[in-house]
Image (tube, rainbow, N blue to C red):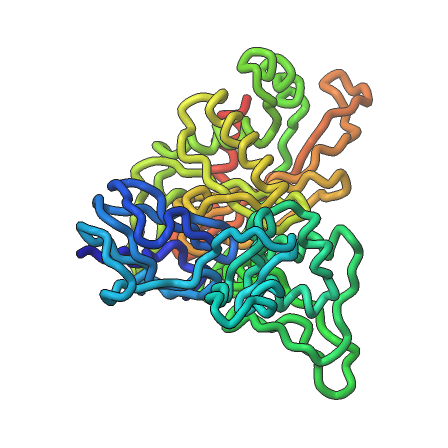
Length: 413
């Protein structure tokens, strides 16, 4: 018998939500088969079986589980529940009404059954109906989102983030009463403030993760900042030809990822991490890039920076994932430097925080027209952007930052 234990998926969370079993209780699995989906504060991740056998659920569906806890067990042969094999509450399709089922809810058809008919399990959804997680249900209650609204989403599992997006798109106001959301250590939804406060708006799970990262950064990293002006007109002109060449959309983001990665050999400390009074250089560049498409801030990582086409492929995939918040945890881990994109046309300066575990974050602001004097003294225009570098002052100094930005300018031209 082998245990499947929950790994540490990220540094922001102390527990994760079991949102889906991919293999039914007691069914056979092969080594490497995905068996369950866990949801973290910013992503969902599949856990795999390490060896073949029969899978037995230990953790229940829609329950929180901590790193190191036993999620499931694998036995050489199927073990009947009566013999002591663990049985978890799961989602089993039933041919009843189309209403979604939440943790602890019993379908109406069960109450009408005869005394000789076994009761349906607590988490049994109707055929084609979604399972609503407990945190999602709590937020539905707090924001006034109806069952019909979440059913109309057409999702097999409705999570807290889905309710947040639904409420935001429908303009649903936050609750003003004293109804507290059952969201455990991840925060409370819709709890009225004291002293006659009109009510509170719950932070999304993504925003809570951002808050933890920012708090950790400001509390542990002595950051400094240097900004320079880049003439990005020639870069923008090149992007059109490059897009045709690689048959992928190429913009400033793709070019900066490629250029930053190319500086790793000459500036290894900019890709390092700080451990006490020692720096740990990275073997290679892994560039995190910020995306905020209205569903929260994500920083997925470009691991393969070998070619512009590979970078463009990766960033396009991440843009699509950011629109739905559909990232895997492995997409969001491993960065050793970050690029923060600020695409609003009016943003001329941005100071990013240094992401915990890294020492640098490069900010790219929106290109702006600028009137300048040409070499012949004539008035002309160019397109510029303020490129800033936030850095951990324990390892990087201002002179180093200026040299890095100068080298980046050369690499881009």
